[in-house]
Image 1 (cartoon, rainbow, N blue to C red):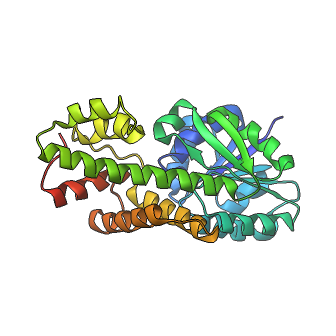
Image 2: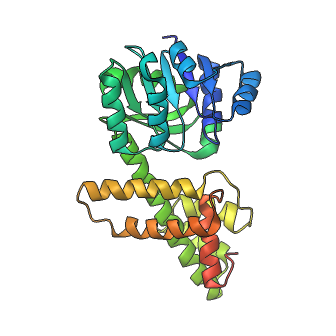
Length: 293
């Protein structure tokens, strides 16, 4: 089915996702920084909206890829009465389950659909079009959402009702945070004992303690001292907070996630809003008095 897709949010991961969308569908974009939207339009042949209302009036599917659910709510309310029955909002934001359910309820009252569709795979997965996309929503809205996310997805999974995809993404990112913290602490101790980081990683990655953090992130960023910036620590801190609330709301023990929230909150305060998520290990190195090499 041909769709007219309005895409909001051309950030680090939103832009490469939007490239795939624009190559598959007639697309209009809007970004808070207007120059970024104009540049994207020039390079990818998309149209540019003057504001979010104009975008929503034009599109039959609107996609949001913004920092928080509060931003999504602001967009939904800014469009207001311009929403039309039958439209679908697909939210790629790493959002909050409760906020998403409230947005979905508001839209449903006006005859619109909502699917939370957070992604995993980072900027490299977005560029390659191989992201894992989690979908939360009613089946009648999930099916058209599958068509729209397919161009940038390697795997698409309908995980449950509205909000469950955002919950799953938050839990996934909490596990990422816990792995960064634990691997950083363990490797710092081993280096202080005289074990090279490379040797330690070779053993760990052939053993049961391996993870994406030890197999990819630490070798590529920490050992090399490259410290690429692809996903802000501030956003991971936010996601860990979402995961913590999911655990609290469901009455599940949350000691590990609670500790990760404390650690990443402190790291965010120390390193600033632009630091990459893996740079949390810089704080571990500073406290340990050693570099992981």
